[in-house]
Image (tube, rainbow, N blue to C red; front, top):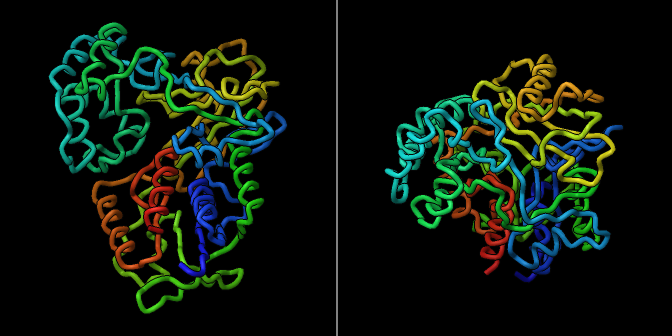
Amino acid sequence: MSCKRAVVVGAGVVGLVSAFILRKQGFDVTIIDSEAEPGGLLRSIKTDFGAFDYGTHVASSSGIDELDDFMFNHANGELKQFDTGHSASFYDGRLSSISPFVNLSEREDAMVLSYSLLEQQGKNTSPKNLETLYRNHYGDLIFEKVIRPIVLKYFGCPAHQLSPACFSFFDLNRVLAFNPSISEQLKQLDDYNCRIGYHHASSGAAKYYPKQGGIGRWYLLLLDKLKSQGVKVLTGCQCKNFEQDRDNSIKSISTSQGMLDTDLLVWSVPSAFLARYLNSTSAPERPVFRNTALFHFAFDKPLLTDAYYINVHEPEFLSGRVTVYQNLTDDNDVYRVTVEALNEEGYDFQASIDHVIKELNTMGIIDHRHHCLYQNCVEIKNGFPVLSAKGHANQIAYNEHLTASYPNLVLVGRGSGKGFFMADLLIQAAELIKGRLV
């Protein structure tokens, strides 16, 4: 390209990483975001009792040197690094401090469930929905007794309606079974390594979290670094329409803040929004979203766990995932926790604050000695997408149509249909953009 100009739509972390890759390739980059305060779920709210995040977000190393240098090499040393993530789960009335996976080993029928896993061998072959995938993975017994009710809790619909892409959500891709010694031996075999977890925290990719200010501080560090490299960031900026060349390349974007010429458009928000600008009639329907609430609490005493997050797999509990800040950050004048919850539209989250505190007590995260110093419930509209089997397949087909039809369009982020988890999406964004430039 003789004149290298790129526009990145969406200023989430995937958009920022996309802008970094493009800047490294010599592009003049402009990021636009419709929100006045960008960052999405990588924001933190500041209170007199410290920072609270919009969910559990711990940044992980990508394994790509230039990308990791951008994300984590900050001269002021504001990030805390740890290689072993201490995560936990609550299931069957017990807090398991050794793993985020569902712990079957303490159920009354633990041996029956565990040995049923030995009958499951081989790879899953192109399942059409999440139920088929889980049945192939765990067998009918574990699916019916364990997985089915947990899926219903989190997604609000049965597994047969969901896409196989939901497989790893909420760490439901493995379970704890048998005892530690037998599990260690079984994990040497591929057929069982993919189905069971270790009975202890295991080291992996380096992880990072800000020493102060919550995960939103990391986002702001990245944003400031891009601006120092000459990337322009326009917030509160809405797209109006596109102008295209004869080959369907998008050559300019009309926005609420003026016209932007571009040689490459990187789209990091849901691809369905492109239909209004490209005169497309084949756009898939937007996914159904579950309403999300974040319950923020501060207590006067240390919380009774060393986990940095806890999956609450108990089907009857409102609590879904618990973030324990004292184990992530050095900023611990008070002891903060965020509880994520998912439910249907119209559910009264505000009336459930005391109920969530009782669940924290039942889980053993607090006890009668803890006094709540701060409480707040923040509701997030369209907080969690429910990926239906049909809808997700349609999205992937639509995205393939877009990238084939518009030569200078790159789809990244969750809306690309190529992933959900932050670490995977960042690597994919880097690979897709570099591939488009070849």
